[in-house]
Amino acid sequence: MRHALPSPLPLPLPFYVSLLLAACGGSSSSDGPDALTPDGSPDSSVARERSGTVEITEDRWIFPEDSGGGESVTSQVAARFYDGREPSFHREAMRAGDCVLRTFTIASCTPACTDGLCVDTNVCEPYPTYVSAGRLTITGLRTPVQIDPMQSWYYPDGPLPADLFADDASITASLAGATIPALSITTSGVRPITPDITGGKLVAPYPAAADVIVRWTPSGGDERVRLTLNANNRGHGAPYEAIIECDVADSAGQVAVAPALLDAFPATEAWTICAGTDCPPSKLARYRRGATLVGEREVDLVVASTFTFGIEHRLP
Image (cartoon, rainbow, N blue to C red; front, side, top):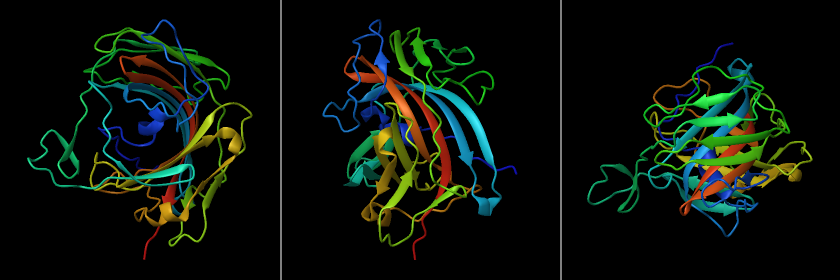
């Protein structure tokens, strides 16, 4: 069965936005500017702003059975680089265990915020300005990838195989340099992840009487796992109203979302088709990450296997 997929966001907000705080199993080339050793934990005391990212993903998307079912297996290479730091339109509202709830609220700014979004009283978060880092060359995949930016946007010029990398592949992203200087980052492939989510959706009751737990079989390696639950937004390309993110070592085999976080999460349906909004899916990702410093900010390489699903969270 064919499904309408959510429109791509012009502002890449969900999931990888907060991977800048997570590092595991990657390495940085000493040939890059100010080579950085990954700190190994998303809650490290070393928290750095990010000025760019390269993302390599194998994804399995399971559609909700009550919407027709089916699945899509794809892969993706994406990259983006910023003039300055990566923007952050969400604010932390609550934290419990390994999870954090971030929300977006339309606020009031005086003077009016004309070149960004007003995210708090008189706090204007500027829209991102994308810049070039020159040609992107990725080695270690099952197919060679070279991308020349078009107006500072990076997209492959053809389809990629669904099985894009070997589980133990050594993967290197090299940038020829432009506004972002030349650099090279290496990390490793990851094994596919399959959680105990059935029927293509995770049901989060309201009120939540207990933790909602998502489980998987650990790979036996040093990867990390991130659960991202996305609420809807108020219009195409707008920030999601809320995001719950949980990050744990893959060896944990599970992550628990506390009732307080779920009860504060907006009403959400496991949509596959919607109009006027992006009805985003949610994800569970097993990933590795490498990073290097450019000045005081990071550029990173994230290699991930993701499982995409819907979340059903109905309020009275």
